[in-house]
Image (cartoon, rainbow, N blue to C red):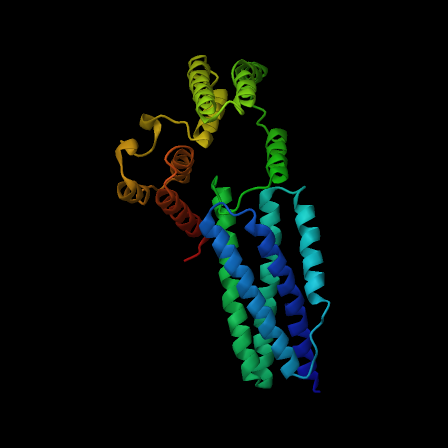
Amino acid sequence: MTDNTTTLITQLRVLLDLTHTEIQVAETRIGQARTEAVRRELSQNAGNARERAGAVEEAIRDLGGLPDVVGPFLGRATAMVKAMAEQAQPFDEALLGDLILEHQLLDRARYLRALATASRHTVIVALAGRLITAHTATVEWLTTVLAEDALGGPAALRRTPMQAATGTAIRLITVPASWSARGLDRAIDTVQAAPDRIGALLRRGAHAGDVATKTLVASRDAALESAEAVTRREGASGVADAIRTARTANGSLEDEELPISDYAELNVSGAVAAVKELTAPADLRTIIAHEEANKNRHGVISAAQVRLAAIAQEVVGIS
């Protein structure tokens, strides 16, 4: 066996180990998919990665080597450790870890193609090209998800409860010093005046049936709307903005507060057409939250997410 062939086999084995980790990470991410379309995409990605792993194993055998039988178990263990570690990480750091893995795969695939070209292993050259195409697409997808999150989301993947708590803690640590003691007092008063009381009612009403629960949710939304008006009138604009953000996330804005005029009157095709004209990520987030909390028209939600992804790709320079 020549030195070049030995190097090819070594690189293929490393790629195989990394691919096994990629498979397990993709399967872990399926549970975080925001929509069924994203869930299908992640499932397909895991399936494609398995096919690539099989092709790499075959290439190793064709070169006279033996695949590492421990690889799949190592990949599963590595992904499990990664998933556990991510529970204490912010969402963006977890995705950056995924991106590092994909860049490793992409860079090694490029190196593999160079090695195979030099030694005239045309089958390996073709395999490397296939790997490069796949990992380039995944790098772009993860970069888009990160950009969507940076623009305020919603991203294609949901945060786990632990990641959400970690992100909240970090935001609390970095609260601007410009918030005066009086402003903080108003925020506390606002929180104590409505959400706690209504939250308790919601908990008690959770078993009272769907109608009762919807009534209590409406009461919460009305209380938040009133709290926003009062705090803004009192000059606590920071608190009012925070309440407005909560109302937006809950999908409880009134029709006249939405970024699309007469939105409630639009059918699916009309709403989709209007969504495609939006240019501000915040406006798209508002529509997605409103749809999910009210009519939940999947065509409209999907159109808004596609539009948000397009804006995110433009921001990070993905054509």
